[in-house]
Amino acid sequence: MGFLLRTAFWLGVVAVLLPTVTRGPSEGDGAAAVSAADAAAAAASTVADLRQFCTRQPDVCAIGTQVAVAVGQKAQAGAKIMMEMVSETLSSSERSPVTTGATALKGDLARPQASQNTLTSADLAPDWRGPTGRRDAGRPPG
Image (tube, rainbow, N blue to C red):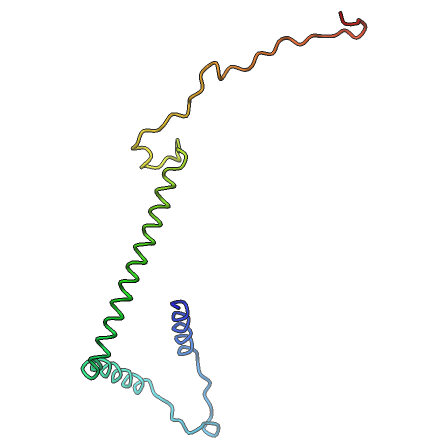
C-alpha cells in the first residue's frame, strides 16, 4: 500500500513538472492562462484554509489524530521487530566459526578464542609405509 502511495505521489510530481503544450488563441477552449502570482496566491489561501480546518471540523481532526497515532505506533512496533531480527542475525553471525588474523572482528578479540590446534605430534606424523620390494624382471619371486 505504501508503495502505491509513493508511486502516486511521484507520478503526480512528475505530471506537475512536465511542460505543457500551449495552444494558440484560435485552438484554446476559452480557459485563461494562470500566472505564477495567481498560483502562489491560490496556494497561500489553500494553506490558510487548511489551518482552519480543525476549528471547522473538530471530530474529523480528532479521528485523524487517532489514526496518525495508531499508524505511528504500528510503525514503531514494526521497526522494533525489524531491529530485533537484524540484531539476532548479527549475533548469530558472531557465533559462527571463529575468525583469526586480519579477519577477526573487534568483538571477537575481546573474548577468548577456543584453540583449533588439537592435533598431537603423533597425529601429524605420516603413516609408516614399509620399503617397497623390487622385483627383478628375470628372476622368479622367491
